[in-house]
Amino acid sequence: MISRREALALPIAAGSAAAQIRPPLKIGHRAASMKMVGNFDVFRLASRIDGLMGVELQITGGEPNLWNLDVVRRYKREAHRWGMRIPSLAGVWRRGVSIKDSPVAGIQIMHAIRAAELIGAHIVLVAFFRDRAPDMNDEDSYGPVVDLLRAAAKPARDAGVVLGLENSLSPVHNMQLVDLVAEENVKVYYDVHNMAFYGHRAEAVPGIKLLGKERICQVHVKNDARLIAEPGPIDWKAALDAFREIGYDGWYVFESRHSGTEQLIASTRQNIAFLRSRFR
Image 1 (tube, rainbow, N blue to C red):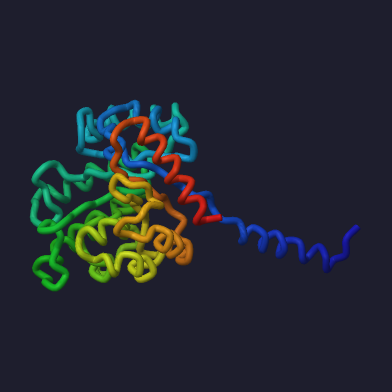
Image 2 (image 1 turned 180 degrees about the horizontal axis):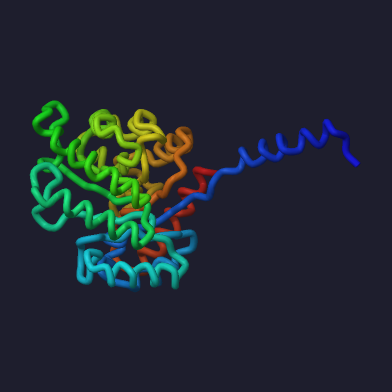
């Protein structure tokens, strides 16, 4: 028998213990970086890599592609067959289409949302780089982008989809953009390496804390063809520590360059071990 006081303390103790348990580290790889766009065997290859849990697919890239709903259904079956998840879809735009000034941009986002809902992906990566990115100092430039994203946000929310913006804007301008859209399912798909590549190197790691968990929906991880632990433009130890400190618990998706299948498998295993070492 236990006392009433002891009994009342049990839920508190259990809740306290549960609060100490971290969610599992979710790690995926981008199909395009695996050189497997349009290839249903991508999940079979991914299953050979211990610790890899999912694959980010391309929507418009390759043939067959995800504009064909029968193709979407087959990818979903293949993912289930090999025990893999599909956390996100990338490659929204057909060649020549830009979020900033293409009349079909909204239609193509809707195609992407439909594919994501059917396949079970939670994130649609919405990319716009260099001259296709809006000028955040000019309302005539960013206003139409804000309007398009607001219009897409409701159907995306109804489908259980977050629109993740990956672009060449600085962290400050990314924050400005998502705050102007002001929809809870329009966030930043944060690529730390790209921040350096597009001229924001000093802001890349601090940008993690600036944007915070509430604005970052997913993360790309890469160091060109090098291992993540090797020297490069980003201090990945500092970056991963910053993600841990803000409480980010979403997917980390590798976008590394590879020379071949066996090198892909070996380097991804090493990169997974490195990520896990920062979250022990």
